[in-house]
Length: 410
Image (cartoon, rainbow, N blue to C red; front, side, top):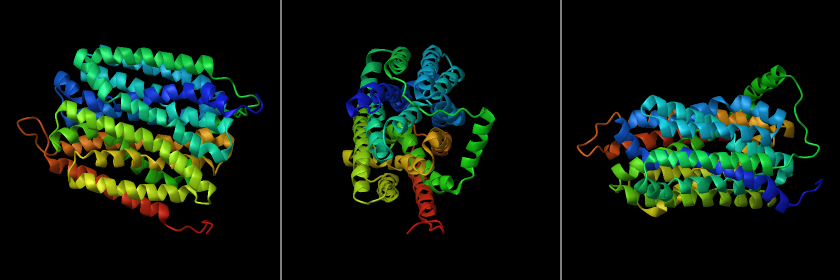
């Protein structure tokens, strides 16, 4: 196993971790479809719905710093398998919950349990593959997340037509236990793997040093806004937007959410392939990310204008472009040592997901500033101002990233 083949790595390493990441994205996106059921059963508005859904991101973000230390210390296999069992418990509590407080606790446990979905895989990729293949492997792996988002659209809508949403969450709990077992029993240990043996205190101090590093804060803001706004809209507010602004019924909205998720899945793969090929031709990852952000800004502008909000082309473009800032992970980790990759990436992931809680909940409270009509819908202006603010912040952070520095090698 000194020089494992790509087939071995794909089947025994990437595939099991992909099962966990599939569940992470499914949990992240499912509330976009079941939102009307939650509002009806709990009697809540957009603000409470946004806060409930975004609790996932609070727990997710809060665990990123210890997650990075654990990944560098114990390896991704053990850490991810244990965490997924917490997500399964959270899904069970969510299914059993009878009020908003119970569901918040369940949602928080889910967020904690899937906190290592992407970072554990990125750590495994850094261990098993050479640096020049990281962007491609990350992009292909993240297709599993897109498939999870895909499963959270029409399949979920069909499921809750025949069963209560609590039954759905019991099924998700079982699927999560299966993913944990796959990772623990199928993924091998990497021979000659270098693990951190320093004290936890020293590792924590190194994490603080990373947070003070100018390289980190150059790329973090555009990643925070790009991924935070994309996950907030895709994971929750796209559904209400289609129903309130586009005037679609639940079935039609679910169909467009399916289109969005399919484009998101393709976007992960296309981003990885394009970045890999462009990099081989001397086109740096940073430039690829910048052009992706520019195109994403154009899509946000169209959404904020509410011009033809139900056209599939808009949602295909959004799905492909909204996660282009994921290239920030290989860009940033490539500037540090391989044994530091777990902590550096999880720190970036932590600030991204911490802001995503603010973004997803904040969008709900901002939308709630406008009164609902007799049918319970919010006016188009509520979404126009909300998405317009996301666009403005994205452009400001892109400008920050593009500011020339003395250390830039031109």
